[in-house]
Every structure is written in structure tokens, then in C-alpha cells.
Amino acid sequence: ESTAAAEVQNKLEESTAAAELQNKSNDTAELSYKLEESTADAELQNKLEVSTAAAELLNKSNATAELPNKLEESTAAAELQIKSNATAELLNKLEESTAAAELQNKSNDTAELSYKLEESTA
Image 1 (cartoon, one colour):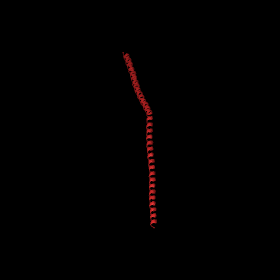
Image 2 (tube, helix red, strand yellow):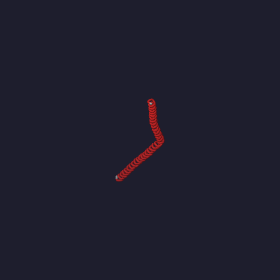
Image 3 (cartoon, one colour):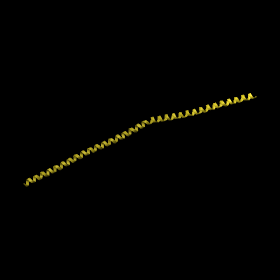
Image 4 (tube, helix red, strand yellow):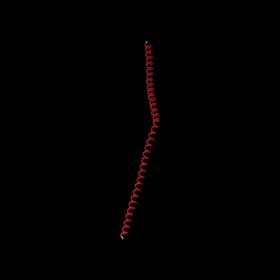
């Protein structure tokens, strides 16, 4: 009986050791899986950061490409404004010149009438 009890005890210890080893193996497998998931998450995060940086760079590149067009538009608008101002100034001068000519004509007419009046009186 003592030998049988010792064998049972040995088998129980072996079984316990095997169960502990199986638990450790399962824990190791779980940790390995979690490590793989964590690594994949980190890689995705890196890819997201690279993709975001690339998108920002592309946006800046597009904005830079638009600058010459905006400069041309702005220059054309400024030139148009200068021409508009010059045209308005010319119109004012034309109006002033026309008014001066009309005034000169009236002055000449008045002088002529005055001369005729003097002749007529004499």
C-alpha cells in the first residue's frame, strides 16, 4: 500500500507539474499574442502619423502652387485699379476743360456784345 500510495503521490506531483507547465505555456502564448497586437497597433500608429504628415505636406504644396496665380490676380487687380483711377482723373480734367471752354465762349460772346453795344451807342 505504501508503494501504491507513493506512486499515486508521484503521479499527482507529475500531474500538478504538468498542469503548471501547461498554464505557463498558455500564459506565454497569450503574452506573445498581446505583444503581436501591440506591435501591430504601434505600426498602424506610425503609418497614420506618416500619412498625416504626408497629407499636410501635400496641402502646403498645393497652397504654394496657388500663390503665383493669386499674385497674378492681385497684380492684375492693382493694375486695373490704377487704370480706373487714371480714367476717373481724365474724366474730371475733361469736365473741367469743357467747363472752362464754355466759360471762355461766354466771355467772348459778352465781350463781342459789349463792343457792339459801344459801337451802337457811339
